Image 1 (tube, rainbow, N blue to C red):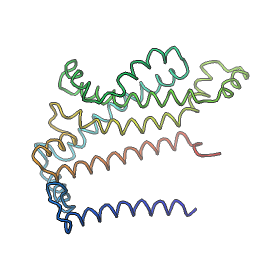
Image 2: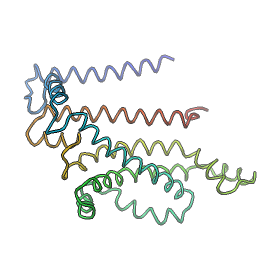
Image 3: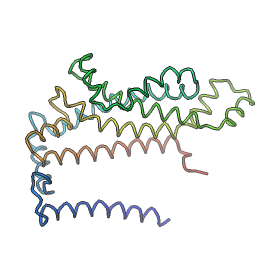
Image 4: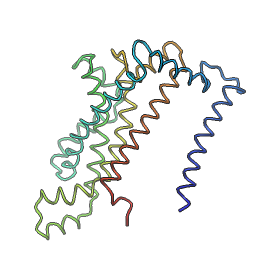
Length: 257
């Protein structure tokens, strides 16, 4: 019973230690503001950007633009990668068709094929969404395949013995058993998409939290850069917590003996 309280204390202590180290580095450590801005400077940058905006857009508009791109691409991943991954894990022929394509592009850095997407789809939102989609598709697909493949054959044989059809086995045995791996892939994909977001907003973007960080770095506005990175980190944590909450509601048996 005491363990969760200890872990919570350690988490808070870690965050506090980082914040204190940050203050000490920028006050008595002699680190220049250009390299590590003080918490006060970052907070002031947040207030100024929230009040006056940045390059024609408010802070909320920058955040909203990035989240819109992220959420649209993420939902597309959910409705395509999950069923394809589950079917590929269940059917080796489907896996043989899809796996070479995914294994080929999965290790490639996003910028390597972003230029191709821009050539094919232009510099508007389509290429950005496609880049985020491709970045998130692979981890979800692989997790779903792994979740199905590692299911014990006894479960399937038992269902067949009871007269279950292939459709029933898929929906009532395989799908529930693979849900834990599915959500692991969804959480991983969210992180991968968020890290790709900056790359997606490098070309012909005029708004977005990633674009704001990149633009501020060009003018050596380290206070805005730190502010943007912190906002991205916080929103990323909140989105991940939302997925964990959904997982807890759906996979309510997880962790139970």
